[in-house]
Amino acid sequence: AQTVTQSQPEMSVQEAETVTLSCTYDTSESDYYLFWYKQPPSRQMILVIRQEAYKQQNATENRFSVNFQKAAKSFSLKISDSQLGDAAMYFCAYKVGGGADGLTFGKGTHLIIQP
Amino acid sequence: DTEVTQTPKHLVMGMTNKKSLKCEQHMGHRAMYWYKQKAKKPPELMFVYSYEKLSINESVPSRFSPECPNSSLLNLHLHALQPEDSALYLCASSLREGNSPLHFGNGTRLTVT
Image (cartoon, rainbow over the protein chains, first blue to last red):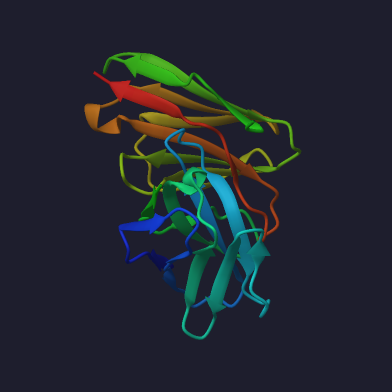
């Protein structure tokens, strides 16, 4: 079975600073995908960024980027120039390739932005 | 704006009631999902429908009954629930391809009294 581990229950960062959220996963699959979702108090799960395991290049979406270390099974999220609107729960998620198997989520990291 | 619409937003029901949660998407996605999320916890997968057929049931109690009438609609029928079933119920949809992300609705906040 696949597992996703987020070891930081809560992180705090000053506005405009950079923060990195950690995620590790365990799988025996070779074809899989990784995602970061944010869930603000409005409760909708919003996709932040995705990474295909077969791609060596780290994904980037504006202020959000990942550090994907396949051998170490690590998938961290870096948020640059943090903004108040970034405050949310952040979930790392894993999806096996090949079909509709749903996402396996980590326990989440609560990100606080200090003004 | 969410492209996956869930109704109702809030629901309070007694343990003897029968109610239904509804989910709708018009993105042409052929995979649809129900997740349950307790406070301060990650979402837990309940059911997956692929091409309107139930493909995954994560050992969910029979008091939860999913239904996929067509490719755009997903229902979750509730009967004889317990107070511990109170949670946020999230619907999601995706293309079937592996790298396709899930698109989530805003959820239904369910309280069982």
